[in-house]
Length: 118
Image (cartoon, rainbow, N blue to C red):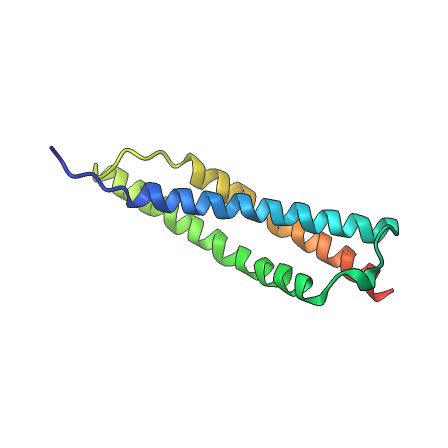
């Protein structure tokens, strides 16, 4: 019985979970921005540490996108060698979500920053 390599599958699942978590972060940021813009929430009520965490994850999106390409090439290379039968659809979905989340987080942070500054 040939030994199979589960590493690509595990890495792909971790990558996909992080991509989905990033989408959830974008939704939270967008909701916060909508509350501040509508006047339902005072700009001073948004804690600075929340903005700093969102800002840090914003920078992580760049590394996440690069890691996605590395993971995709790793999966393709090991699949050609016949080491596993993993499909790369979760990685591809993560690669699509990451830039979308990146630009949506930028938009939400800019709007939130403009509302806090005014």
